[in-house]
Image 1 (spheres, rainbow, N blue to C red):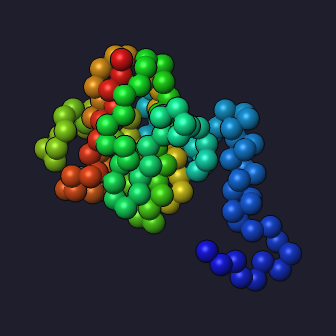
Image 2 (tube, one colour; image 1 turned 45 degrees about the vertical axis):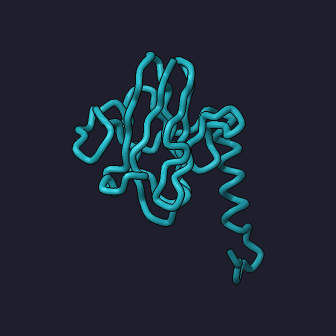
Length: 144
């Protein structure tokens, strides 16, 4: 990405990093995207940790990893790294004929993140409802 004409202004990426760090320190902020129980939509960079395996990247129209195994009480953060919008929507089964459950439903624009804390053991399926015809836009979280 090339920055042009900043004319003394702070580049947007720096401002974004400052905001993400500030929000991480105060617990983040809800933006009204599918505010189900345990959910916290945050700007990119907020919540989650790749090192601990609690982050899911949405890139090239794929949830990565497709299957994530975590312990009860773990917060998982999805980050949209595509230029297209995506959703992270809980569904009752894998595949294109699934029905939404209402547990969580987040709409993410480019660079946005969504976090959800899993409080019960089980297998949780989710999809991008915009691109649910694509096999790579379906995934699952197994909570032990």
